[in-house]
Length: 379
Image 1 (cartoon, helix red, strand yellow):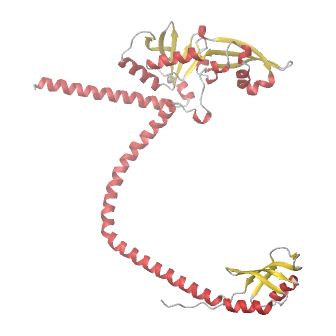
Image 2 (cartoon, one colour; image 1 turned 135 degrees about the vertical axis):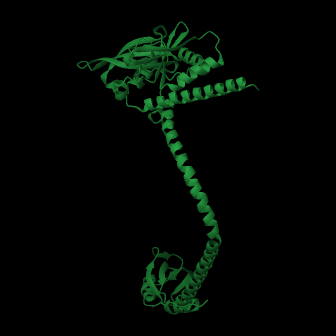
Image 3 (cartoon, helix red, strand yellow; image 1 turned 60 degrees about the vertical axis):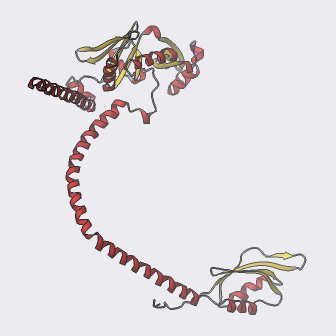
């Protein structure tokens, strides 16, 4: 390969790099402009990030609005064939803009002035949608519409509302056709609006998402640009930290084996302490719990001959006695007098067994636990 060809290829490569850097610089500065407050942009004549699409006889003109007037970016026809490169160029322009606004010809729009009660002002959109088929030839589901209050009659409690309507079929087909040619429409406004009203979201005919979803793709890209800068800074810091991490890992490996042995020894000590505590608890519980035979003997001595039990339940220190007695109330004092029981009471109302004429009862009592001294248990 000759030196001349090498030089040509080198120059071509440098030109491609220069083009990429230029594109990045335009994108980056554009994102920073989008983050600048509107008042500062106006003071220093920073251009708006709004792309206007003017439509006339199936001919589209893409422009931007500046302090010196409109700047034409490109033109194309909706009916003429277009190349993939042209579509990509338009899509880049549309993606760079904060909003891409279609200025809809007035011959596609229906204007209607309606008089309504002033009380409807707070819910005007719902009222207009409900009354759409009464005031226009269309149903609410068949149109996109926007509105503005043009006058108020305070005495008559009336308001005049200007309704701007376009059929969904016409607008959907039109925006889809334009989108296929590389321009994604985010707003649609009447073409006869003043320049100051074009950016007013209340004049937009397209439905907008809820407040929580109103961030546009351009706003997301602005956030991404900021995060991009943060990521670059973090990446540089990461390289330095990663080198320190590798060194720390090397040192950590040297002490990992002794650390594992220490952790294993600690685990064994903890397990041994747990076993000792469990054993001591079982021994103390056995010492403090009264013998079942002693408990049955105590109940047998307490309960008089005119009483018999049908059920005796002992669960976690709580004794439940159910049965019949000639005098159930007397049982409470008899059981309370025993040092083996505490908190003696009826757990349900006393009833009479009509067959035996005995009183049915259900009594609960707590076992009086012994208080043993803590035992030192040897393993």
